[in-house]
Length: 448
Ligand code: B12
Ligand code: SF4
Image (cartoon, rainbow, N blue to C red; front, side, top):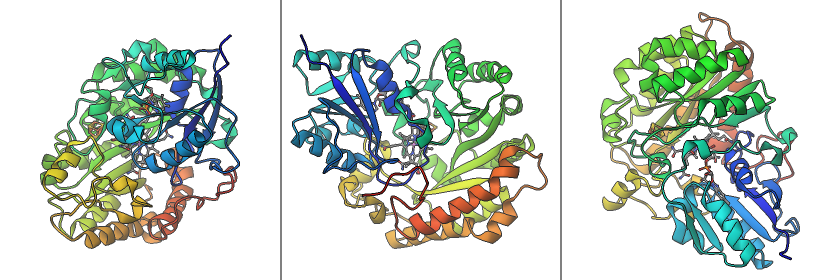
C-alpha cells in the first residue's frame, strides 16, 4: 500500500502585511486529492521556527512572490535537510523557475489547476519531475472554490477573499499579471462566484481580482447578483471601467466600500511610457468625485521613479492626493519585477543595480533597484519617504476627512483608526526599517 501523503502548505513572509487569508494555497488545497492530509502554516501569522518548528510531513508546498522568495528558499532548505521534498509555486518561481529549482525539488510554473493533481500523482508513484507547467490557462469554470478550512479564522481579519476573474488585457510594463495569467479576462461562471460568496460567513469580502470592472457586461451582472446578498466588499479597479457612472452606482448599491486604484502617476508622459494607456490623468478628478459622491472610498496607489519623474514629483503627487481626499494611499518605488517588460528594458539599458536584487538581504532597504533618470537613487528614496511622512501627518489626515460626502461606514468609523494605523506603519516600517513584528497584533506569534 502506498504511504499516505502528509502535505504541509506554507505561505512565506518577510514583512508585516494585511492579515487577510491568501487565496493561493487555499486554491492549491482545493486542487489536492481528498486522501492527502493537509496542514498549513502562514509565516506571517506564526513565523516558522526553522530549528525546532518543522512539521512531520512527507511533502511541502510553498508559495512566494518576488519579495518573499528568499524566505521561501530558506524554509525549503530546512525541510530538504530533513529529507522532505519541497515544491515551490506562485508568481516568482514561475518567473524564475531555474533559480527556484536550485532551492527545491519541483516547481509549478503558472497556474496549478491541472499541474498540481498531476504532481501529486507523480509524487505518489515516486516519479516527481522537476518542472510542472500546464498547457494554456485554466478554463475559468475549472477554478475551484478556495478551501478556507485550512486557515484558522482567528488568525485573520474577518474578511473573506475570492476571485471572479483572472487575466488582464492591459499592457502596464511594470506588472507581472499579463504574462502570468494571460492577456484576456477569464470570467468564472457567475453562478460559481455567487455560490462562493454565499458560502462565506463573512459580512465583508475582498475581490482579489486585478480589475473588478474589466468587462462592463459581466461586471454589471456580478454587481446586480451581489445586491440581494447584502455583503460589503472591497476590491481593485482600473480607472477605465470607472468612467461609467452607471457602474459606480451599481457598485455602491452592491455594497462596495472601497477600491484600490492604480493611479501610478499624475504625469501623462509617465503613463504613456509605462503603457498604462487606460489611465487618463485629465479624467482623474471626475472619477474621484463620482466615487466619493457614491460613498466609495479610494485607496490610491502611486509609483515613484518613472523616467519622467523629477525631484518635484513627490510634492506634486502628495498635494494632488491630499486635495483628492483619498482615504488612503500607497506610495511605492517603481520595482523591476522579473518577467516584466520594465525589467527587460532596464536590464538592456544597463540600469539595474543588481540583476537579482531580490536575493539581497533585506532587499527593501536597497531600493530603488535601478538608476532613475530624473534624480539620483538617494533622492528617489528620500522623496518617497517624505511623501509617506507627509501624507500621514496629522494635518493631512484631518484635511482629508470627507465631511461633505455621504456618511458611510469606511469614512465615518474606519477612517481615523485606519489612518493612525498607517501613520504607525510609516514610522515603524518605511522610516524605521522594521519588517516583522511592528504591528504587534495580538494574534501574531512571537517573532523569532
Ligand atoms: C490580492 C493581492 C494583494 C493583496 C493580498 C491580500 C491577500 N492576503 O490576499 C494586497 C493588497 C495586500 C497585496 C499587496 C501587495 N502586492 Co499583491 N496582489 C494581489 C493579487 C491581485 C491577487 C493575489 C491572489 O489572490 N491571486 C489568486 C491566486 C489563486 O493566484 P496565485 O497566487 O497566482 O496562485 C495560483 C498559482 O500561482 C499557483 N500557486 C501559487 N502558489 C503556489 C504554491 C504551490 C506549492 C503550488 C503548487 C502552486 C501555487 O496555484 C494557484 C492556482 O492556480 C495579485 C495579482 C494576481 N492576479 O495574482 C497581486 C500581486 C501578487 N501583488 C504584487 C505586489 C507587487 C504587491 C505589493 C508589493 C504591492 C505594494 N507595492 O505594496 C504588496 C506586497 C505585500 C507583501 N508584503 O507581500 C505583485 C507581485 C509581483 C511579484 N513578482 O512578486 C502581483 C502579482 C501584482 C502585480 N501587478 O504584479 N496584494
Ligand atoms: S497593473 Fe493592473 S491594469 Fe495594468 S496590466 Fe497589471 S493588472 Fe492589468
